[in-house]
Length: 545
Image (cartoon, rainbow, N blue to C red; front, side, top):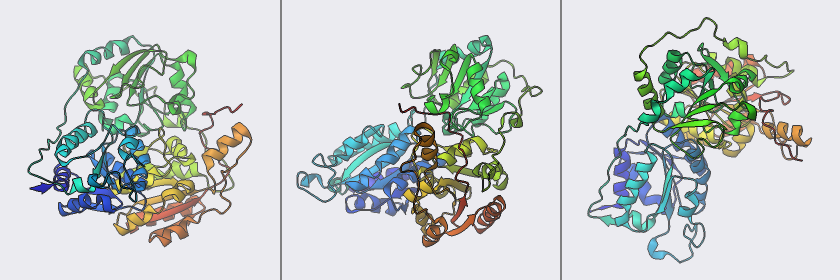
C-alpha cells in the first residue's frame, strides 16, 4: 500500500521531471515531501506567480512537463496568472494546489479552496486545458492520467489538479499510471495541397510565429524557405525562428517590427503561417484591402484559424516540425537558396536614435555580439520587449523568448530561473524593466539561494514607459505612469544577495556584462536609459474618443 502522494511523485520522476517550483504550505505538504523523497529538487519561490513562470521556463527549455505547486486559497489564486500565460504559450505545466481535507468540507478554514470561498478547480478551468478537484484517492489515477495526456498531447498546455490533504495521504493498493508517448499526427490530405498553392501564388510569404520555437522546427523552417526560395518574416513572439542575417529573412513585422516587414505583409497574396494566432500585435499594420487571397495556417489550436483574415484558409494541424519534414520529403528537387538579389539586414533596419542619454536601442543593437552563441534570452513585456524585437540580432535560432500575446509583466524573470535550473551549462539572460522588476524582482533571491546564475538586465527609465508613451499619444495624459520615487535596482539586487552594476553609457554596460559572464554569479545590471526614447510600438494605437 502506498499513498496518492507516492504515486504522484513516482509518476513525475518517471516523466523525467527533475525540478518542482512553488511555495510550501500545510495543504500541499504531503505531496511536496514525497517529491523530495523521490529525488525531485524543490525550488522555493518568493511569489507563486513567479514559481509558475519558472515551471513554464523549465518546460520550454526541456520539452518536458513543468510542475508548479502552491498551497490552498491565495497560494493557488497567485498561480492563476502563470497558468494563463502557460496556456497562451502552449507550455505543458502541471499546476498543483492544496485543499483542506474532504472530510472537513463545509467547515470554515483558513485559506479555503472549496466552493464556499475560492473554488480553485473552477478558477483554473478557463486558464488551463483541464482542471479538477480530486475528491477521492481511487479517482486519482484516472484524473492524473487524463491531465498529463492533455498537457503533453498535440495541443500542449497547462493542466491543474486540486489535491485535498487527506486524499494526498490516502493509501491505495494500486494506481495504474500510463505515461503518454509522443504520437505523430499529420494532416496528410491538407499537406498535399500546400505546394500547388505556393506554386500558383505570385508573392508567397512565410510568417514564422513562436510555434516554430515551441516545436523546435528551426532547421526545417530554414530548409523549407531555402528549398522553395520563400521570404520569411517573424511575428513579435516568433522573433528568432530564423537567424537574423539569413538571406531570406526580412525582419520582424507588427509591433516592434520594421516597416519593411509590414510592407511584405501588405504585398503578399499567400501567407504560410507557422505557429501564430495572427493577433493584433502581428497584423496591426495590415490594411483590410491587402488581406491575402490564400492563407495556409499551421496551428494545433483551431480557435482562430480562418477567422481573422478575409482569405481562403487551409488549416494544417499537427506538429510543425513533423509537418515540415513531411513537406520537405515530398519535394522532388532541392534548388539552392537564391541570394543574389535578396535583401540584406542593413536594407530594412532603421537608424539608431540620437539621444543625450543611454539609448536602449543601441544596447540591444550590440548585445548579441557580447553574448556567447549558446545562450537563451528571455525578454519581459513592456517597451524594452519591443525594442528587443526590433533591435536584437538573433544568431542562434530559438534563443529569443518573448510573449507579446498574453504579455504578463515579470514573466521573464521566473522563466529565466526555470530555464537555468533545467540547463545549468547554458548562459541565461533576462531583460526586464523597472516596472516588471518591482513586481517580481524578489525572485532574484530564489536564484541566489539555489545558485542559478542568471544575468538580469533591468531597464530603468523610472516610468511605465509603454503605457506612458501610448497614453500621451492617444489622450495627452500620463496619469499613473511615473514613479515619484524611482527604484534603485542595484541596492535592491544587492539586498537580495546578487552582484549588481549600474550602467549609464554603452561602454559601462559592455564592461558590466563582460564581468557578469566571467563571474558566473547571479548578476543584475541596471541600465539608466533615456526617458524620452520612443519605443517601436506607436503603430498599435487605440483611439479613446
